[in-house]
Length: 238
Image (cartoon, rainbow, N blue to C red; front, side, top):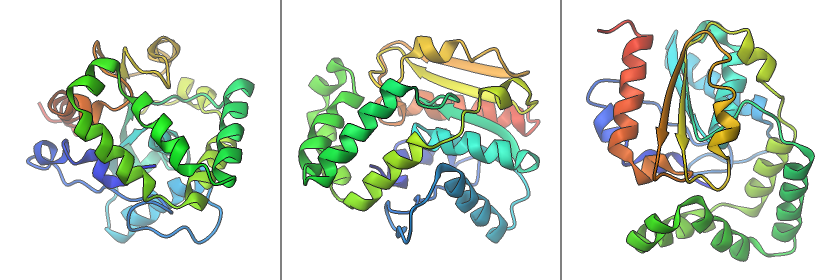
C-alpha cells in the first residue's frame, strides 16, 4: 500500500541524469480506483502515460507489485521497453500457498481489520536491524499505508492472485533485465529469485546483504547508483 513517494530517497540522485516518471497505480496516491484493475491493466496505465508524454522507449523499474506490473508491461510492449529493472519482485505467479495467504488478508481487510493488517505487514518488510535503527521511518510508512482505501488494498491482492506467470516470457526475451535482491527479504526470498537471474539473455544482479524488501528506503544511494548504471547500459552510454 504505497504511492510513488516510496521512491523519494532515490529520485534526487537519478533525476540528475534521467527523466523520471513515477505513476500512482489506481487506488494509490493521486490515482482513483474506478473499477477492478488487473496487473495487465496497470501495465496498460503505464503505457497510456508514456503515450501521453510522447515517450517512445523507457527503462521500466518496478518494485514488488510494481515488478509484476513491469513484467506485464515488458511482455505486452517489448518495443517500448529498453530495459527492465526488477526490484524485490519475481516473474513467477503465486503458488497455492501464497494465494491462500493473500485470500486470508483480503478477508481480514473486509472484516474491518485494515489497520491491524497494515501494522503487522509494514514492519515485516524490513529486517530487524533497520527497524531498530529507523523506527520513525517505519511509523511513517505505516501511516502512509493506512491512507490507502480498503477497496484498493483488496484490488491489489486480487490482482496479484490473478496475474500471469512470466517465466516462459523471461526465457525468450532479449530485453536486458536487472535484478535487485535483499538477502534479508521476508516477503520474497532472494534464493527463489536467484534461479531466474540467468534465464534471459542479459542480466544485471545486485544482492544487498543487509537489505529487506524496501531497498529504496534501506539503501537508496546504492539502489539509485545501480539503477543508474543499468539505465546507462540500456541507453548505450559508456
